[in-house]
Image (cartoon, rainbow, N blue to C red):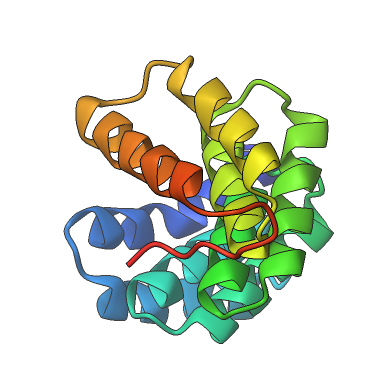
Length: 167
């Protein structure tokens, strides 16, 4: 088994726990994976996911940052980093992380969504609209489409420069 496959195998149990809605239980598995291999970007990524689900946004931010440091083209980690930064109130850094994802993956729906929300939080409403409309063009699930359409309506009601945050 190559190193990448070994690293993925080390987090499989944790990803199952996350899918089952058990982020607290996943933390132990992920910390064990990182004790065994501190260079495991997958473990940092899913540690970020678990901490984000537990609403520990600053800790999630740190885990995602470690993942992108180890693996600069790890799309999910850039997107997670953007969301964690935005939830932690660091909107400009959230936009920078989302834009780093878009530089690497310009048509990715998750990156476009993260960029739209981060730019909206920064008050750059026209840029946010552009990203969110491009996101809708990726044909996301209906529930997310409806949410984004609601965000677009709210962005249209404000002024450029006025920050927007989802409730």
